[in-house]
Image (cartoon, rainbow, N blue to C red; front, side, top):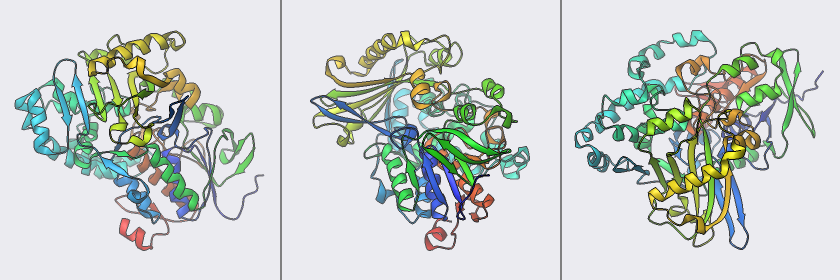
Length: 526
């Protein structure tokens, strides 16, 4: 029998953004929290790594997310802990937000300034410019209608019968894809791509992604695109700092080898260094990988290995992290190159599972905003090309150098000529690397796909339905992936844990917030 301390104890597997924000909320409520992280750094995919170039110094890179959207959710979590996010992290709103380059012709320097954005749209299609404000107005209503649904748990199919969800359906238009919904506003396919490429934040095609997610681009224009000084890893560092100051213990380089059970209840975890009894186990690791490696198949009724294998997973990414001699002051902070046959790109990624001859790509030139990331007079370039997740059609052990050469050639299309000679540091990640180094199932960097048959109660639930005492947080559970949504999952899951442990929660129609609920800070947030 596992011996437990009198004070309630939660073990969190993984120090990603969901685990760290949950540690903040749980420790604020008086819970003892231990976070166990397999990597030597915090943050998971929202972490920072340092590349050392001999003789040139250090280059700092975000591993995954480079956009920070909709700060409100994380601001609320910090406020609940008596902190101000903007005191902890220096957030810079970007304008323009990013530079879109269309191989088919034309460009857009996206901005939250309505009149300037209308002019940008008009440069592609004058007739589409006037629809921009209608797009904003209608998506504002859609977001406000659906936001409460993203802020509450879906514990069973009965929760789908909520009248609020039924009232939101006409606005959400579940029968449409993102692209088809945007046709109601914009006739030019390049304009539609300007408002739909964000589906890739979820690892999906805008031609398949549910129309709900037109709210992604809306959030950018309504609330801004931010760069945290130091990179998005600075967010993880701030969360870890606050959680530790509140009493959380974060242990790095300590992978969990198995979850301990009494019957069908999780009662702790085991690592090579020892055992950690717990009143609740919160999994912030990649869902599919964690289930297959930490929870015996016999204990999983709904999410057995066979079912996981049938699920749809997101695309992956081919990554190049480059430390470069010199600067690129004429290159935008974010540049997205959209190949002429973008739809063919997507088919190759999602259907045929082959590598594109003419891939679309994204480049972050963060030093134009944040010179702290590279030695003086140098730059970091973060290059991402969407590719299929791990599939037998692509053998990365034979394809890395070939595809790298292809991507380097593509970079010339945005003016990055002679780049090869200026590289002083380089790291590459492929889908195989994401799987082996980061323990991501199939290297699917955006987790389970966000199709309607894998959302709400059909997604793995925050209070994990197959194992008592186990909870989930992060992109693999409800509401889904992307930093703002992961932070919502943290609030939902933390509230459920506190409720089940009898610590008490404050639940409002805005969000779940842990006790104590009568503090001035909590009253202000709620």
